View (cartoon, rainbow, N blue to C red):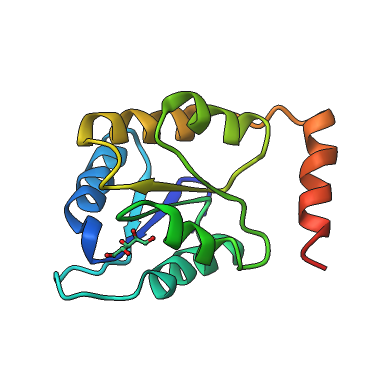
Amino acid sequence: MSASNRVVLSSDHAAIELRQTIAAHIATRGWVAVDIGPTTPESTHYPHHGEAAARLVASGDCRFGIILCGTGQGIMMAANKVKGIRCGVCADTFSARMIRQHNDANMLSIGVRVVGEGLALDIVDAFLAAQFEGGRHATRVEMIDALEG
Ligand code: RB5
């Protein structure tokens, strides 16, 4: 099974519906959506869900991860604690494209209380379509990764 077209999705309770909408959307773009939940609306803890998605990206099981919480911030902070993860929160398509082109981000975080569904889908499309440019940016990404020790 190739990881190259697999995208893991995860969220806390705040973003279940948007996460499922994004999963269905990326499937129409040819990606395999690996939606690891949660599926029930009970209050839960975003660090757990951010870590779970990040582990699947860091292990190579999935090429990218898309994670969501109320702001996108807490779950992003958790994901970035996992070695090998570069995750950015995006509320605009320019940033979503640039974190791939310049930062080689392997995860995208979105705040369901920050952006509406239409913009969220555009952000996802921009992120998944962009390519890392390498060159001088590769040197800087290596510097980021070196901070992990
Ligand atoms: C949950 O209420 C909220 O704190 C969470 O979704 C997220 O916004 C945290 O960063």
